[in-house]
Image (cartoon, rainbow, N blue to C red; front, side, top):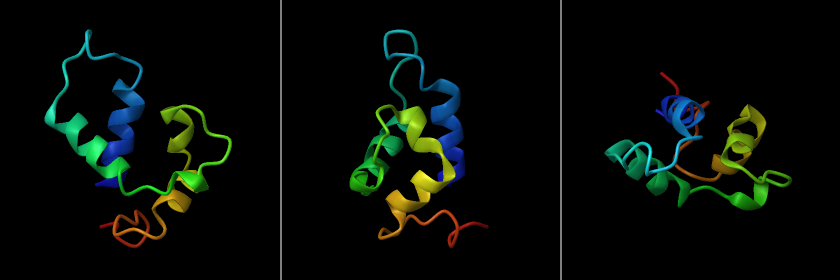
Length: 72
């Protein structure tokens, strides 16, 4: 699931909500962000910079959303 959300952000993240309406997928992404440890994202200033594998893994390491261990 995490890889799919990151792919969605990578593909549509540049568009604003006046161009592309807010969807349920956007709501899921916002909900997942609440679980992320942004202290681990040092140096990242955009969502695009949060999509690197190392940063993403560090941000979710202490949460239930662990892309490596939960991958199928």
